[in-house]
Length: 232
Image (cartoon, rainbow, N blue to C red; front, side):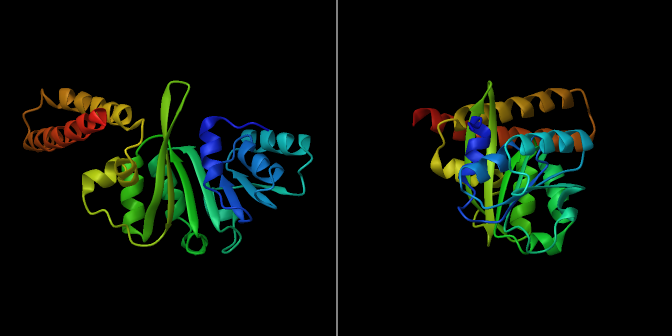
């Protein structure tokens, strides 16, 4: 079974022999791959929506893995018992949604040894939460698929060493490794901030003025980082 580049990158962060839960599994492609390739003996695959849950069940049965990919219908980590999964995969949802799912089940989260996360948006907010709640951003990478760049974050229990809020927002391991896609990734974020600045330009309120100053300063630093990436 061949995975897309994004899913293959997620799979690469799953340690061999680990107990894994794929939260929001959709079609269960990742759990099926992990079991079929012998990376994991079994995987728990969950989804909160009945449509994807049924679709996942069809895929799992079609691959003859009904006994090794266990499907559960329910909300986030609430369908897991503490200690059932040492690795949690949460991919294809917003960073703040991922944060809320993790925060909603401390007993389950506290037994985990690795998080493999792929936020569609708000990656910075997710990193802030991880750093504030005892998770070290162990590694990160960028994957380009169908003209979109995806960020993947692997976190482990520990103290995040990055104190610079901007570096933490953008991806401390991405910046350290100078990922080949980093310049484009930063350009995308800068474009978002420039659109926000444009929207704030008509407002005369003190709050809008402060936000304009903050964003302008942030953009200057980001431009320096982006230029440094291009020189590399």
